[in-house]
Image (cartoon, helix red, strand yellow):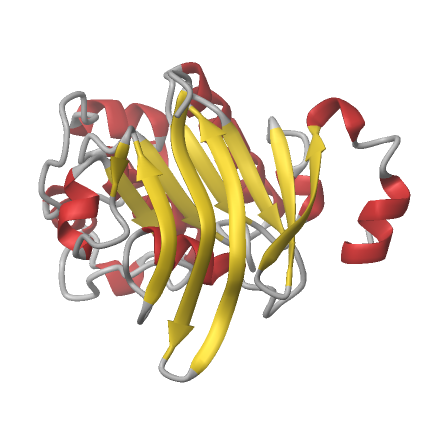
Length: 235
C-alpha cells in the first residue's frame, strides 16, 4: 500500500441477501483527496459506501483503510478508525434539537470540530440550534447531517447524494464547505447524481456500472472525455 493511500478497495463484492450488487469494485483514494463515484441509479455507488462501512450483507474482497484490512470488522470498529458516513436519508433525530443532534455522535478520532467551528462553517445551524430536527428545512437537515460527522474527528468522509433536492443556494454552500474540508486534509468520497456539482470539486471521478468501476477520469481530463461521460451518464 502506498504511503499516500488512505483507502484501497480491491475486488470488492457485496450482497444484500441473495442479491449480488457489487461485482469486483477496485479503486484507491489518496490521503486528502476528494473523489466522486458517478453512475446511473442502481449502478452500485451507494452500496459501495455502505460496504466500506460494513453495512451491507456478505462482503468479499479487500478494504484496506489506512494500512489495515477492515473487510472482516463490524461497522462500529470501522467507524472508530476515523470514518464518517452521511447517508442519503440524513438520519436526523427528529425529537432532538439541532444542537443535541450535533452533540450526540461519539468521538472516533482527535481533531473533531468544536461547536463554534461548526457554527462558523454553518451559520444557519447556529440560528436554528434550539429547533427540533423536524422543523429544519431540507437544506438545514443536510447541513446538520454533514456537520454531525465533522464533530466526531473522522478523516474519511463518505457522503451520499448530499445535493439531492436542494435549492441552488444550498448546493453552492455545500460546495464551499467541501472546498474548505479539502484544505484541512479530509479525504472525501462523494456519491452524486449531480455531475455539475461533483465535477468541479473532485480530484478524480470513477464511473460505476453494474457494480464495477468502468472508467476513471481526472479533473484535467473532463473536457477530453465528454464522449465517455455522455455514454455512461448522459452528461
